[in-house]
Image 1 (cartoon, one colour):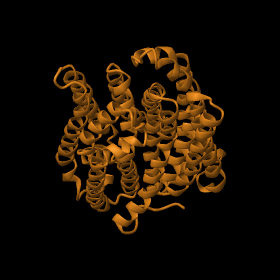
Image 2 (cartoon, helix red, strand yellow):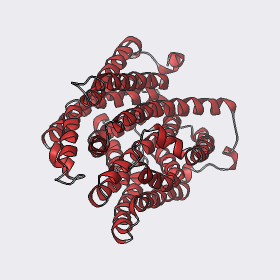
Image 3 (spheres, helix red, strand yellow):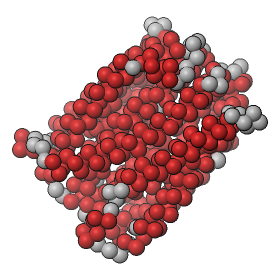
Image 4 (cartoon, one colour):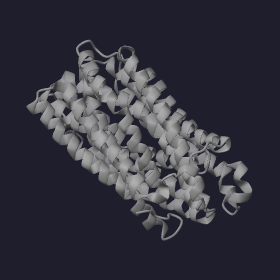
Length: 454
């Protein structure tokens, strides 16, 4: 079902479009969370630390592909808002070729540099063989990640957020079943958990590709659309690579923090691995709401509905405030029971450190919710560079403070946890200031006459 986001009641339309995306990304977390749950429960703390560190690395790699797809998705949304279907089909072809090439190059790089990557992450000797076994299998799913995210972005750009959810739901259930089968029945260890993830990824990737090509003929490029135009390629590349850079910087900063966490030993590594999964579940819905918000803004930007954009901004920030307030209360109150999902009750040190992390981060979830909306807003208003700047401020602050504060004996690992919300706050203040400085003046102006300023 394709949804025109330029019509209808704003809050209802935005929430109806966003909800399947939010639910879908929660399901997507099962790819690694299922591994973490099974591994932590049945294979021990070293295996949990290995999968947790691998998750951070895979998030960084996936962010490159996801950023390219998200950037292209903004272009698709603008074309759909303009009702320029021939141009949209040509852009789909150009984007697919561009991102497919990058995906293949990335796959060769990570397989060739696996040992170097593990050394750079400062993985302890007791953990590195397990991490290597996991990554050697899970890297095979990079192509599947590209297929799913590309076609999911295509469908979401035209207002269809339900079909990506369906395919993701099927593969998430399959992942859990295969995890249990490979680890408990076949005793294949962390490599089996990785294989379960990869198989599930290909089910969702190939499935959504086939669906889009055969069930959405209005989106299927024909021979007349298979051509290269320098101007179109430049615009797609600008959006795609800028968003990719933003996503990569964000996750590279997290990867640097992972290396710092690893230096504190297996207990802190395991606590961080489990707590980050809970953290991701907690704020992932607002990240997806930010992406849905970006599609809403982009479609209305293409349709030149300035007033609707302004109303949508107010509605989105109000919804995020309510959601984050509820999640903050839940995470802070139930931090220990949440940690027990992933960690055995006897691992008291791991549980205590994970609870400490969750209560610091959980108290500040509105900061990251606001930041995701700002990312989406600036991408849709053809300012992807501003999203990158906000990411650099957020992650730069986080990394710098994490290394600085954790070196103080009386602060230690608490400094790593506290650096995160401080980074969110500084980025939020910068993004809001920039909006008031540059964009409020344009509320009553026509986008057509002012495109160059965006």
